[in-house]
Length: 337
Length: 258
Image 1 (cartoon, helix red, strand yellow):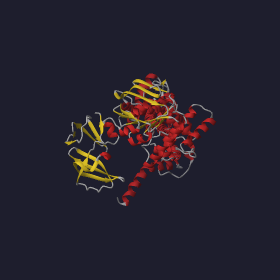
Image 2 (tube, rainbow over the protein chains, first blue to last red; image 1 turned 90 degrees about the horizontal axis):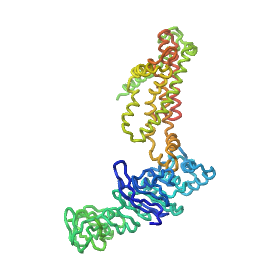
Image 3 (cartoon, rainbow over the protein chains, first blue to last red; image 1 turned 120 degrees about the horizontal axis):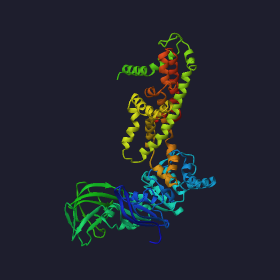
Image 4 (spheres, rainbow over the protein chains, first blue to last red; image 1 turned 180 degrees about the vertical axis):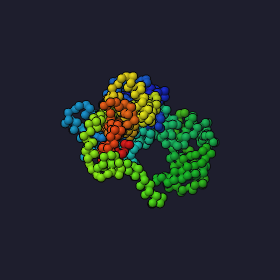
């Protein structure tokens, strides 16, 4: 791809004898917000650390803005990294934390002051200059860490689980904040997360990773609507995934007749795609919970556990009761193995 | 537990801790000519005499020199050692830790004898140099231990953050690691200082004619003169230690580190 701003080519990353990422190829465009999504141990953090220069690849190339930086030290790459723990310097004031990198560049004091104050204003921390990190809340610390990276005007800003240490309300606030900062500064952002809702809400493109390889790459809409594999489907909330053979769905414990023919080896349904109350199959309600706009059921069926969302208007079926359900063709997602 | 039992235990503990200290203070304040308790009358003349004894002044200067510079040398070696043990997954790190801690485990008499027999005599090392090396080695475990425990409280990613912001590894150490373990270093210095100043067994072997640390000098003074000035001097030294620890506690919450 010619418009790649960050380009990872045949990247192999290992810790000692353990290969975390065997061979990764990824192109990131300038100004893009990319999420590296996956469960722990999938290589997403390793990949991010290699872009930062904290981990030297055992093979492959990393290019940033047309320059090969594979062997360039972390302090010479022009990269920003917001750590999951924020990694603020506890002995320095908020102002000095943000000014830290600028001071290393031996810039004139007036410029350091101007850029630091601007950086703190960008993240809404004006007036907190004299505070020590320990005197700030978790959300403020995170924004301080963000400002510390942003004032360096990095080519790429990396964020490690940027929302995971925040409570639900702050998480939403910070999510908006990150999007706003990205729009304002136009900086290319790569963030690592294990939370698919975070990736869906923030990213322009999601890189879904599994065992050090890219499982699927696409826009949030693509990944959400059209996961290609069972792993991707499971990550995107398709909780009912079964093997399809001829006109049957099978699992380890049994089989169900499928009302249609499919060539796909696997079929998946979201809980909202399962029809409850009518249909050719029967299941026993094992659990039922109210979820505002809908009711979440867990059904025991001949094929195993089915999770299904029923409209709240439908009368509740008591736990232990039998209910008809259908796995309709219209909401089925065909998957690769 | 009944109240009475608690008071008895507390009383006995305090008696053992503070009792000797009080006896020494009072014995030094005796008006009599011999070291005795209870003191025969009260006077500060022995406290005054301490300052006139020539050999005490020389040995105090030597002990001060050893305590200050021996501890500084131990920190100079101990801080990088603690950092390396903490930061890198070194082969044999456990063995190194054990060796560093050895002077605490091995009795001082053995350390002194070994140094005398295999270091001082064969290499013909001067007494002052031998004492300096010994005190440095004896203080080293405190330096490594205390600095290690403050390093453990430090998050590893702070250094990485500093590097990404443009620091070299050395700058990351001096600008981020050092300022954050400052308290631990001071605590290690004070512990080392007190340990060195009070050290007897190893110094006993290494002290020679005219070159003695203060505790050794006090011992030999007592062999000849059994007057209360030794008690007075002990009391003064105890006050010095208490004052140092008190100031350290006030300034940096010393007890957090030990």
